[in-house]
Image 1 (tube, one colour):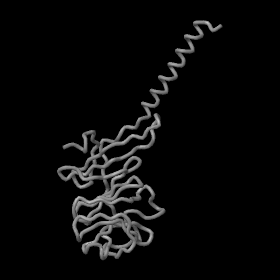
Image 2 (cartoon, rainbow, N blue to C red):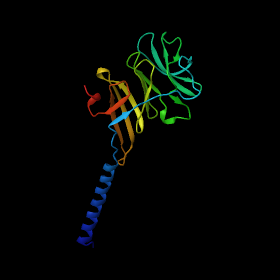
Image 3 (cartoon, rainbow, N blue to C red):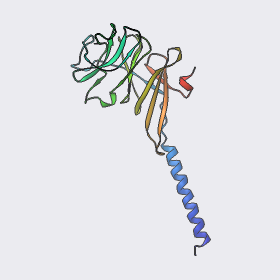
Image 4 (cartoon, one colour):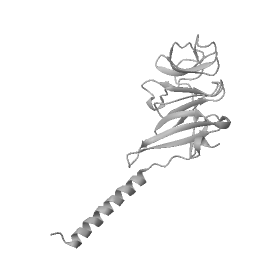
Length: 196
């Protein structure tokens, strides 16, 4: 026969354990950084110069019948590539975005473009690489964990969806950042689509 005091203690203990687990799960939920600042990408040593012909391409996106952008491979690195003749030829138009085997968190696999000046690469790693001046300058922002997507927003904004690692509750946190300066500074936002 179980005594009432023993049963009450067991129920209180079980409740305390459940509350502690819930509190730990809540406490483990990461807090998104309010701002993520990008850094100017400088050329990696011994990589191809701008204007180098590219023959190995992956993802492609066109902003007109002649102008398109892709992720191109030259040697052991991935570069932003562009065409101005409808895809007949491609060339690099920026520094190496990712050097294979040396920069895994910087890897990018997807390309997007708002127009011929604003082009961005993301996916697979933590980085989003953006130019807002047609390839003259490239900026890289790093997410705490995984860069899921970048899409054009309203009023020239870019919206970046970031996933943080699995928290204590077993769920991954997904955050939204918005840039209104071509990817140089990203601000955390809870407004749908970065605000309208």
